[in-house]
Amino acid sequence: MPELPEVETVRRTLQPAVGAKIVAVWDSGKPLHMQRKPPRKKLRSLIGARITKIRRHGKYLLVDTDTPDSLLVHLGMTGRFLIVGEATPRANHTHLVLWLDDGRELRFVDARRFGQLDVVARDKEKQHAALSILGPDPIEHGLDGDLLYTRSRGRKSTLKAFVLDQGVLAGVGNIYASEALWKAQLRPTRRAHKLTHDTARRLAEAILEVLHNALDNGGTTLSDFVNADGVEGENAEYLWVYGRAGEACLRCKSTIRRAVHQGRATYYCPTCQTP
Ligand SMILES: [Zn+2]
Image (cartoon, rainbow, N blue to C red):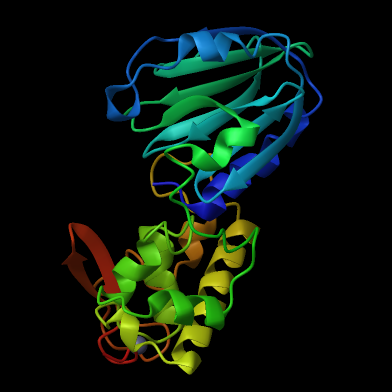
């Protein structure tokens, strides 16, 4: 599933769309996330709007226009948000096409349909069901040990669940949670409320490092992820622990283990990630 670095990679590669005017809109009418159909009427209201900025909060993209509204996009599991020439054949599972006045199109393609599309009024965006629950974005808003320390007080969940909680931090998912906990040498099953100032600082630094590394490599492609130009990311080659069960730890040579926590795979080193 695309996480912060993948969505930020899409945001950056969508920049050529800024300044273009949306001249027509098409949607598939097929239900997306939570069986909700694309909001056709709201999407059509974008016709005539000029794209002024493309923002991101956690895993959500916001396409701002010169109207009071923005297009909200979540890639879900398999979503792709592409900028293509109009002659490019339309892929299977295309659910939204925005025709631009420069001859290109923005297309949302999603095979498994866990993605989301909506149109939100910017002055009410903080009340939107999807956005109102998000904590700060570690790249956009910064992250330090104090923030993690404060937010972990009274939290009896595991560190893994704490880092994955989008209300704590927006954008970190399963891959980068495993990576950051390995980097910080913290066992994923430790309890969040037991973080000290020192371990919270280590974890904050590790989260920023794994996110920045992934961004530098254009995101992690395990199966579906591509940037807005259709190009896969290269970060999968640089993962320290995720997906490496049975292989030697890159720090201490112990064998990396895979465990399942709350239905999600977690990778860790039993030796150098202290319980
Ligand atoms: Zn190790």
